[in-house]
Length: 439
Image 1 (cartoon, rainbow, N blue to C red):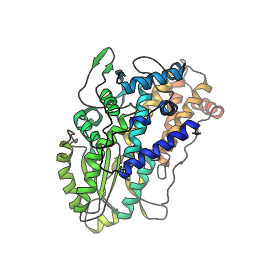
Image 2: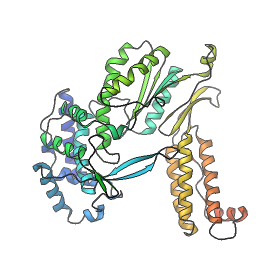
Image 3: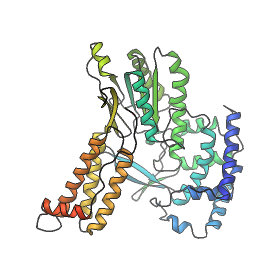
Image 4: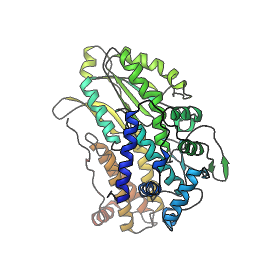
């Protein structure tokens, strides 16, 4: 993004907040809201996505942008005076995994997103100085692919070991408001910010025509929610692992946390089992419950090491949509490979099929453009070294799905010969590897 004059001044303010936080570790900061002025809110507006779904008031970004300066000034006055009222979020459900389960998503109003962004900019500057290096989710200049690559690299250097997968049951739905606010007050004591955060935590949830006021949880989909989740889990897990766990380990370890997805790898099995044993109590202290079946220990030693010690073959584990497993490289070396997880692959095919069914009567050019965009989006995330076969399989499956639903545009089936001619005129992008690493 190109920096405007306003955003340059914002950068200076962000640096001041970060320096203040770094110079006073462990001290609760009391004067932060004064950084939020009209320029700050205008920058928050610039950073807020304009193509998102609308909230309970039905106002989109274009409508809010009319008379913008007046609205920003009024919003700032309401936020600082305490007159701002957080509107309910609109709840929708999206598919979760490969099955009937869904994930609730909360959609704030555009104005609420804007104000949440303004507050998140302040909190991010405060907490980024103390967040751990192994935390990747929803942080500036960090990505899922960095998390995947660092976990792969650390595990290969260790020769594998024992993986502990952590699955927090309904984390965003069960996050305890009181405990979160207590954690926030350890670092932030600014009355304006705490008041706004309290209003967002206690805002209602509108699902259909039913309005409720949950006493726990923070809606996924809100601008502020990922940051609050990181702040909470930094206290619950990150600091605890660094301060209390690591010094007691007998062997090496590596950790990756991406929001509420946590994977730990230990060189020694006894270390892994001891940590796994204490995890439920640690998370339970903060009102969180671990899934008893999905939180598990996975033997993941390099296969030749495992054979030398008379162990069974190495297992697999999932993280961020990929299944991780050992395999031989072209140079005949043992490396960790990552392929699209089965549930994510199946969900993607269902989404393609649903779209083709609903749009089978659109023009071929319109269908090609959308399908191409969807495939390119898939390749942009899943196009990593060692995942070429899954990309190829998806490409051929999508061709078959498209042919299936084009055949149902009329009573006459569409033969594959004709379909090949269509794909010659309206080709779909072939698989490509976007993210490469050495093997």
